[in-house]
Length: 513
Image 1: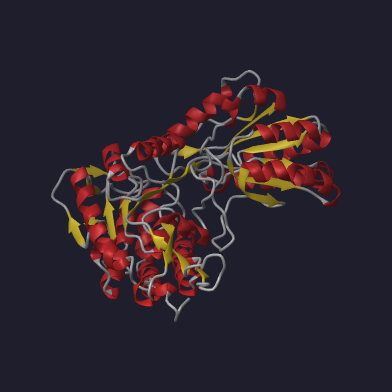
Image 2: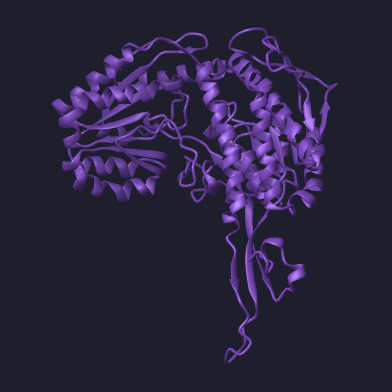
């Protein structure tokens, strides 16, 4: 493979503990353009080999220094950059995503790796706590007690369909687990196996460069459920990171809970990300807000987990202006390529759920064909929505629902009726401050991120970001899959009482505590 190649085709093998493994049955990918490629079909035996290697790697990798793991993460980012053109070429061919989007996503992915490298170099993730001995305390002396966060063991990561880089093979879950000191076994996504393979090549090169145990990372290709089931049920796997559908995630979550040793399942599953347009903002800039909403709704063909699928606006002239502007903007958007044929079909099915309801009015209705999607817009009132919560199920794609309310009280009732969300957004002007204050306790209970006068598509990778929320947005409301707090998913606290310095973890010894 060369950096200037324009005809690169993946070899289609698994990477298991430093070896590229082939020779079994294969499956073909379904690229948005160009010829398909053949990929090895993973089996439970491949899962077992990868997990055994990950457990072996744990005994050295988990006890390596934060600085050495940080250097490893930086090396992965460097190796991805060295393959930049190939990643973009194959990623665009498989997913249909534009070159600019993939270039930006590659930058984000490398940024995540470097962010975690910086984070662990500072030692902030360790949460070190030291209660020195008090031998003279009465009526009883206090022992020396120290606490630090320690890695939990091998982690399973499932690639996401809509982010072939940032939420897949070398994405945030992998970066967080490796930063924590946990080896990773990735079940690659069948929508972009070639892209996953190239990223695995980059990780493999970084392993060799840094002298890391090869079992620290494995990639298994698969297009069936048996590999995923075997992975989450393998006794050596201690946690799972997943981004995907509610149905798929819930099935894996249940499998994790049913194990003889239940393990945490950190799944990001689904969200409609409601947006609330308050009264003064509606009076002053309803059309601007409607146009902006349409732009966010159709970004990337609506294939973002933070896509704002529901807009809550007041009845009356200002609400009408918002709806008219959104409608006009959506009518200017042509067909967009979807990530997979399956996602395109699911989008068409989702639209039909709305079309078949008499109480829902179609404002923009388009027939989407093949692997393309066109925008759709529907409208109903709060009373109808509260009686039919199927209207609140995520439709993955450029479909929006406007909910009209008659009062602030009804807006509050509606907000309380929403399920858990990744995001909730308020559009407000200065005169809306009191109304926004009344709405905030509801929204912060419902969502992992609350925005004002912005749109949720686009998730900044930074220390303070939370990408998660109450179920069904995620399966663990105390966790995030974006931001440095994501590392806490793969750590657990351990206390050490009266240990001599030589027995303490290096990060807790007197020289470092």
